[in-house]
Length: 485
Ligand SMILES: Cc1cc2nc3c(=O)[nH]c(=O)nc-3n(C[C@H](O)[C@H](O)[C@H](O)COP(=O)(O)OP(=O)(O)OC[C@H]3O[C@@H](n4cnc5c(N)ncnc54)[C@H](O)[C@@H]3O)c2cc1C
Image 1 (cartoon, protein in one colour):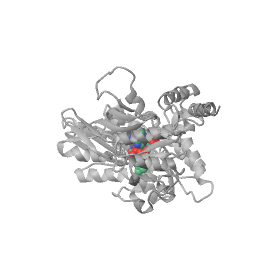
Image 2 (cartoon, helix red, strand yellow):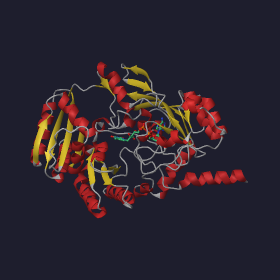
Image 3 (cartoon, helix red, strand yellow):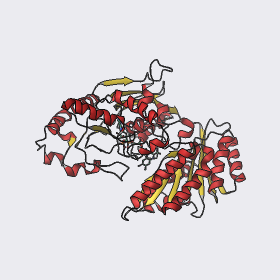
Image 4 (cartoon, helix red, strand yellow):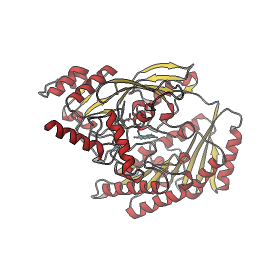
C-alpha cells in the first residue's frame, strides 16, 4: 500500500526522514496514521506527524538527530499496549516505532543473560530459552505482544513479579540513543555497585522521556524445580484479602498471588477463556509457589490452612500443567475480558500496603456507588498492586468524565492509604495531575530537573509523566523566547 501511494509529498522533513530509514519504512498519509493516534489508553488520541520504522541503532540516532536539529517533537513506540497514554503523540510527534528492531541478539546461559533489541516481544524470550531450562521472569499480562523496550520504559510488572521483582530487577545494561542523538551504553552488565550514578535505574521506568532504548541486556533465570498452584473461592472479599495478608505474614513468598472479585469473574467467564469459576462467589485467589521441591508441599498445606481459617468456600490445587495453564490464561485475559461485559473500561493501577487491602477495596466499592459505575478488581494482591477496572459507556454523555473522576478517586484512596498512584502501568498523560497526590512541588521539580539534563530541548515525549505545564514546558518556552530575540 505504501509503495503504491509512493513518497509524493512536499514536506521536506518527511523526505529527509524517508531518506534516513528508507521510503518503505515511513508512514505519513493520514489514513495510515490513524492506528498510531492512541495506545492502550484510548480515551485520548492525537495525530502524529509521521511514523518511522528504523532497522538499527544508527538509523534511530540519525532520525533523533534530525528531529532535534529541526525542532520536531518525537517519541518511541513499542507495541502500543501502554495503558497510561505514554505513546500518544500529544504534540504531533514523529513516532519512532521500534517494532522492526526485534531480534534476539545473544543468549549466554553460563552468565544467565540475554541481549535483545527493543522490539523483541516479551514472551518470545521465555519461549526461546525454555527448552534449555531457563526463563525471563517479568510477565506482564500483555506479554504475548508487548515489547521488552516498552517494558523497560514502563518498568513493567506482572503476576510473577511478587517473588522475582519487576523489570528493573532484571535489566543489566542498556544501549540508549539520547534525545540529542548520541548513542550511549548504560549499566555495567550486572557488575555490583558500579561507580557513578545508577543511570540504569533512572532510565528504567522513565516512560520514554530520557532516551530511546535500542538494545537491552536482561537477566534470565533457571526454571524452578517445581511449582504448584492453588485456586481458592471466597464468599466475602474481606476474607480473601485477609488471607492474602495471612499468607505473606506466615513467611511464605509465593511466586504469584492474584485476586479477582465478582465483577472481574463475571468478565473472565464471559470472555475467551472461561474455566468454570462460580459466578456467585465474591472473590478468588490464584496462588503459585515455586522453588526447589523440598518444602513446596509444606507451603501448600500452610496456604490451604490459611484459606480454611478465612472461611474459604472451596480450594483446590492444580492437578497438572494443563489445569494450571488454563487458570493463568483465564486470569491473563482479565483486562480484555471487560469488553465482554461493558462497552468501555478504564484500567487503574494503584499500589497500597498489603495490610490496607480490605479498607481500600471497601473505599473502591464506595466510589463505585457514588459514581454509579461498576468497578471490577483484578490485581496482583501479593504486592498490593490494585487494578480497579471502571466500566462505562462512552456513548452516554458525561460517562467518560465520570470514569476518569472515579479512577482519580481510586488513586487518591491508594495515596491516602500510604501507597502510590502507579504500580506498573506508568503515569503517561493519564496520571500526571495525580502525581501531586504523592509528590510535593519541590520533589516534582527535582525530577523534571533530571529530565532537563537528558532532554534539554524537551522534544522527546513532551507533556508526559509530570503535571502540566511543569518545569520543562517553561524551559522550552524560555528557549523559544530567547531564540526569537
Ligand atoms: C491487556 C493488557 C494487559 C496488561 N498487563 C500488564 C501487566 O500485567 N503489567 C504491566 O506492567 N503492564 C501491563 N500492561 C501495560 C503494557 O502492556 C506495558 O506497559 C508494556 O510495558 C508496554 O509495552 P509496549 O511495547 O506496548 O510499549 P508502548 O505502549 O509502545 O510504549 C509505552 C511507553 O514506553 C515508551 N517506549 C516504548 N519503547 C521504547 C523504547 N525502545 N525506548 C524508550 N521508550 C520506549 C513509549 O514512548 C511509551 O511512553 C497491559 C496492557 C494491556 C493492553
